[in-house]
Length: 420
Image 1 (cartoon, rainbow, N blue to C red):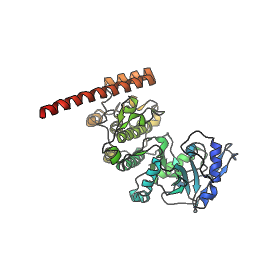
Image 2 (spheres, helix red, strand yellow; image 1 turned 90 degrees about the vertical axis):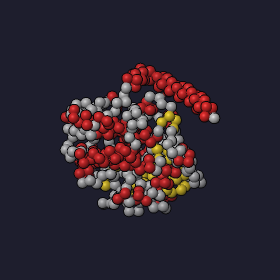
Image 3 (spheres, rainbow, N blue to C red; image 1 turned 135 degrees about the vertical axis):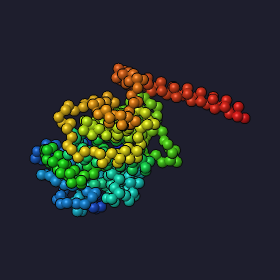
Image 4 (cartoon, one colour; image 1 turned 60 degrees about the vertical axis):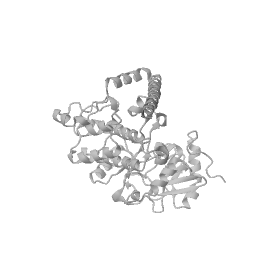
């Protein structure tokens, strides 16, 4: 009997067929100590579409790495929770909530998750590096089931009770990225959709969810992680060299404004600096409106997103900068709600506008001055020509690099002749 008759990475499928297949795996997983949520194809109560619901009683308080619970309903899973049919939710023998992800054997994601599973610090609360722990990897034919604690997703709407709590959230993610880069893992998809928090709710209204979030934040109990390594690459030094550079087509343009090197058609890029820029863009989108109350966010974000790649922070440098300013971040409530919320792109925001002159002068060396007249022209050209303009920029940069390479080779040849 073929247990897994499809490629889990294939996005061309009927979701109901996937749900039925997962339901058929219930016995196989139960034998290994994992009980899938019950599949309810007709929906029930206030839900009128298919979803999954815990099959066992929800436990009381549990220890890390399992999520904090608190709800007026079971933590039902539905909608986008399921990663295109590759992820379902389950419980272990103690009723603790889990996520189960199907992975194709030999994939880069399996390689990375095996590495992370063997990392002892991922099970140690004191040295926790803010990457979602892998509890188990179950082999099945030429596939694997990755077992992870089920944590909750985050919202784009800021919810932090004080500026200091917002800074702690940013620090969590900087720790995560620093850890990944030390392991030479290029995440490749750092964005709000790939950030989880260790709380799980079943509230039917956002107000109750945010209230729980605020209370846990104020008690210092919440942690945030990066997860989802289906696009990640482990850049081992033997294959990729000490300072890897990858062709720009390795990353998508995405549905939002990507870092400058992808936006402006650079032929290749530093993958670790690219991850930093993506995280900086998330910080700008989520916390840019906090800057009038927390001016020190301006040099941090500028240093992470700048088009000057040499000047851009590494993950470790951004974390060190955050550690150095954390004590100066106010415990006050942000006042951004009293002013219009920024809806533009990160490259359009002047993060230093209206900040005190003495502050701007003190931190001037961190200010991003890379948005030169030439880059402004390229951005104008891109907005006018869209995809065609991007290919023109990419072609010009590639041709310039090729010609420069030829001249450098000729110069080195002539130089070597004179040396001889």
